[in-house]
Image (cartoon, rainbow, N blue to C red; front, top):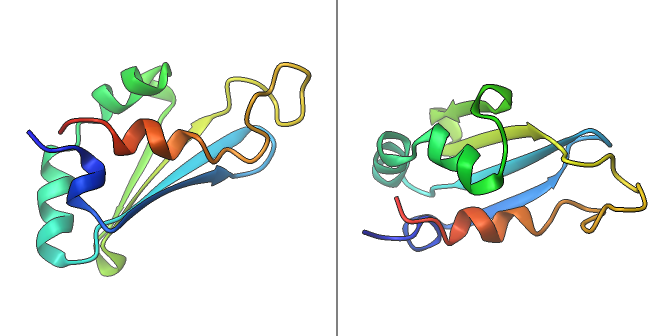
Length: 99
């Protein structure tokens, strides 16, 4: 098995407003996109992120070779218990995931 980060060009996460996070998986090539698209299980992604799989929104964008995953933030951005104001650390969790 390979980690997602080894298979793609880049994994990036960021805020999508104060209530949502978005994770972008840049595959680079058509072949890498197709391979990742088939192997990436949305349920396993949800489990890795500690989220409900029904709350995840996944967009496979073939014309850009990108897979985008959006999910509700566990805490509102800027709340006292928010440990990641910019949503940047979520990419590391996904990058290290075996698929």
